Image (cartoon, rainbow, N blue to C red):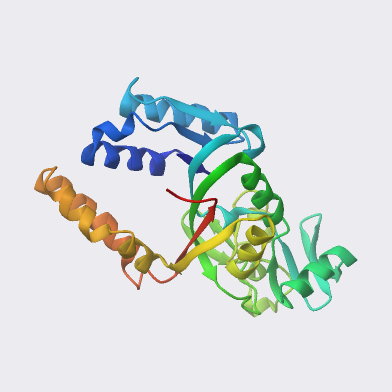
Length: 280
């Protein structure tokens, strides 16, 4: 079981805890790994796993998908593709930043061809999906990869680029001089650029094509709410209720409500499931 982009490792740890609660013997058949390029995050993840599981679980690390191969794997990622670097396209131009100044200028021929191929006339274009899919295809003979992210199946034909700072969201262009002064945010571009998280909506059609070109098939795509219900969430909760105290069950139910509520994450987030090889 491999998590990609685990941050503190909470998701993989929750999965391990859930497996242990329902079927402790199953844990002995599994190995756990996190793909993490940053040493500081690796240290943080190892510390958390030691606090949570002691020496009962061995957590392995690699810095990239290219670093390991295995026979079969289950990959999972949550909000990873919205963190990939992107180009920002507007007609035949793309966004540039120089000395904290944002401006549009003609795009190069390679980016222009990619933008045309994926139907992006106005919006964000990620150029890293193909390399990621190829690396995953080489890493395991047979696997399933499930990822959750916010976005749409087709290009939106609009900008979704935004900045997160101290739990606040700011439209990227509202921080720049590219919009009229009366539409600008109170904070300046200088105050946040290269100091805060920047994200955007995922173009899932582009993601599908990148994986298909690497020989990886799309098995399922749906809203997060539908995916979790289809995965058997309700049945698992019933099993879970028989294994834990009412207080623990209530805590899990409150967490799950946020994930499946259409007004929160249930509809906004999407699930994509990819498969390579026969899944036994």
